[in-house]
Amino acid sequence: MIRVLIVDDHAILRRGLAYIISETDDMQVVGEAESSAQVMHLVRETPVDVVLLDITMADRNGLDTLKLLKKEKPRVAVLMLSMHPEELYALRSIKAGASGYLNKASAPALLVTAIRQVASGHKYISAAVAEELANNFTDGSSQERHATLSDREYETMRLIASGKTLSEIAEEMSLSPKTVSVYRARLLQKMQLKNNAELTHYALKNQLVD
Image (cartoon, rainbow, N blue to C red; front, top):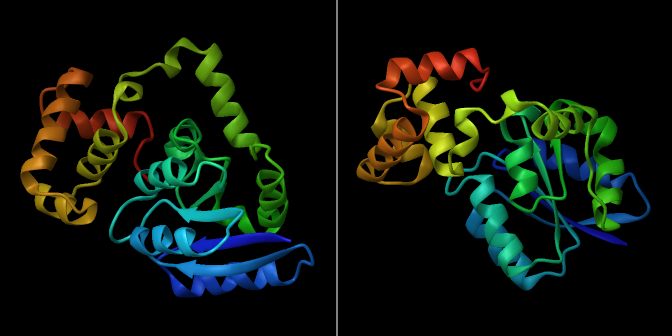
């Protein structure tokens, strides 16, 4: 029996995912969490084989939580489940230790297959993610400036490009405005950009904003 932990900050979505899993005869939901703190508590207290992990949560984003999970429970398979398109987070998730990445739009049809695949020790790679991986190795243009950013810097860039203020970004990322300013300065330097306008233009041109 595959033991699954569902992590998402929307109760309705958690219920929907739990229902899909309940229709199978080889897996069961052993817990639900809506925050990074809750998932870390549950994996310490409950045997888990697969964690379905959302990218966006209130207290800590999914990539940071993924890194904590893999450090503390390296044998637990983590399947990232997000509303964000694959090109925004899939490669970063896999590089950070995820066993797969599934867009929520395709979850009902592919969820069970993906869970079984990662539970067996394999990666779950959708056609879109496979294409991104191939481009990453074969296309020189894939090594664009944003590829040099850390996960925090990358998220800061996306939020600035989406029009959020530093204070709003600090609240969303659970950081201080001063720390966000440091990330902003670093990413501008790494990407050789002068200001938020140039950053926003770059993000839009490269389709890095939803």
